Amino acid sequence: MAVAHRKEYQNTTVRLPKRVYDLAKTAVAKSEAASSFNDFVVQAIEQKLRQLTEAEIDAAFAHMADDLEYQHDALALANEFEKSDWEASRAIETPNEPTPKARAAKTRSR
Image 1 (cartoon, rainbow, N blue to C red):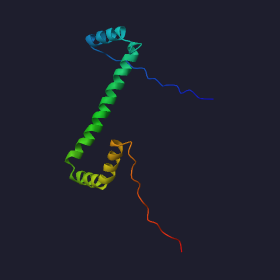
Image 2 (tube, rainbow, N blue to C red):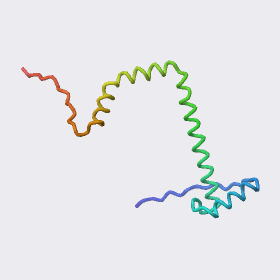
Image 3 (spheres, rainbow, N blue to C red):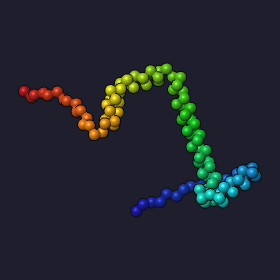
Image 4 (cartoon, rainbow, N blue to C red):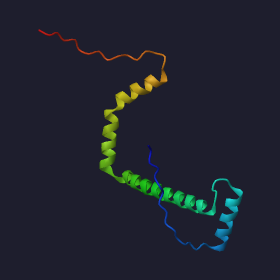
């Protein structure tokens, strides 16, 4: 039997500028995206949190542009996989042509 997980909630009070409150109430009334003002606020906060998380990730990746060691390692890795990448792209470009198989060296047991 599956156990249903209950969401935990925390009540809080938020003071909003009247103009923001009125616009949000109007948006909820006109939209089917949120069933209530509370849902609208929760969705807005969740969206903002996703944006902040993405911005943090983007900032971390931005440092790579100035990291010479990372650039050297990335170039070395790209060069290492250059042949297999070319073979993969060739296989995608010509899906109806048979892909050449690598031949293993033949050995005999003595």
